[in-house]
Length: 333
Image 1 (cartoon, rainbow, N blue to C red):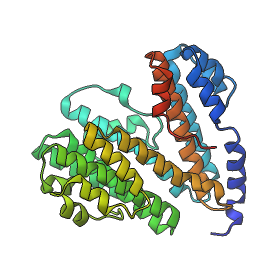
Image 2 (cartoon, helix red, strand yellow):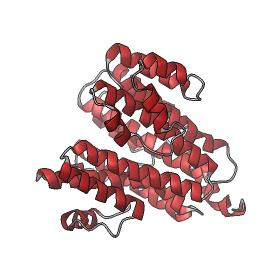
Image 3 (cartoon, rainbow, N blue to C red):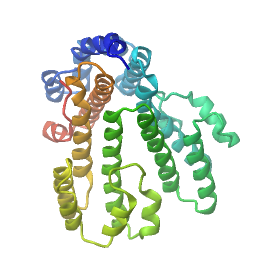
Image 4 (cartoon, one colour):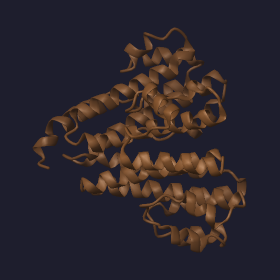
């Protein structure tokens, strides 16, 4: 695609980047005495119009959802290749499908867990799940949902719904990136899959499950295939660290898995993985024309709303500032 096709969209992105929350504003929010002070700070930002509609502090989540929805809508409108930029919105559809399927099987109502940010209206998804007719979904997602429904009737384990739908999501993301010849996105997605699979390996081992279950949860299209994880399954986690030392994310594995061996918690690994993936997205800042700046901005906005959410939750629950600061991801500036 010619560079001229990206000229308008990238120019818009560069202007939008200047309005992202900077580290100084984030620090002010961390140091705020309470959640009300954070709302006052947000009045100084792009969130002002959404914040003005809040009826109470508890409405902050709807503000963040609205901001993300508006961001995805804008990027879709200005993107020369919306099928690529829309990929990152699909995770909300998958989240909603997981929630609705589990709620259906457990005969529960969990509407408060649903997200309005997806590409498919919630009522439409509810109709699909109720009728068990998924023909309106992308074929790859449809197949994964139908497999999940079939598996659940044999083995009513909610984890299988998560596994099957995650496989469908990442298969679709990878295929779309590859078909559009986006080397940046293809590598971005493959790296994300690798890190998710490493986490899955550790979890499967810790739960005492065998290779049969491992095969179900390992996502395809990573740089590391199932054989890698199968071969290393019975080895110690030290061997995993050694074998991945040469990878760009080798330090993530070393620090995150070493911490897991001491604490039996994957929180450190998850945070390091998030930070590493975010660093890949930030490369968009340095590309003059292409899909990279658009993806980079989307991820920056996702990151920004996560930061605000974490600070708000921290203030509402009176968590010390240092603990909030420890959990925050880097800011895209």
